[in-house]
Length: 229
Image (cartoon, rainbow, N blue to C red; front, side, top):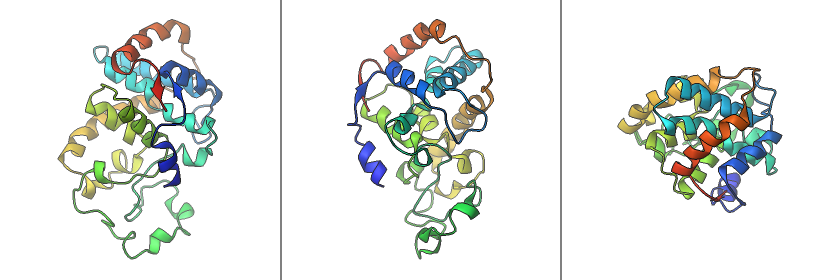
């Protein structure tokens, strides 16, 4: 909750998308066993993977570039444990599909709380994920940045950014009891994005200088100028 209040207002600093992406050159995600090079390269790999299969969807390609940009939190001083990794709802029972659930949550008081430990917790059936409080991390932070700066991307893009680390939902099939019709309509898009996030990680690094003008054109269309972070 403290991180949510601190960073959710997007008053940390001002920078462009490209400046933030360049900053990610200094970050290697400790939680990702498939990547031992800077996160900026993974951004271009993901975007290019999407571009190859969806050449007519510039907005989708841009999501590939943007999706992990919230990890600048780790460069701003936040420990990686509260920036990277899988996300999940809080305020209701932790589902078994959460990675390392048994080993990491055994001392969490929410597991025995009379409300938070129940199936619906503080929520109600099919309340919609927009009404669910998610664990804090780079997904939620970048979603807030997009909202704060009025990105003109379609709703599918906001879902991809906000929930791409919500593996218990889009891969584990859990938390469907909290989903509304809109969530279920957006789920295939989140799954489609996840294919490129997971399977475009290779040791062959992209030619960033050659790709930069193309992606700058997409940035100029959907999220131009200096942004609040």
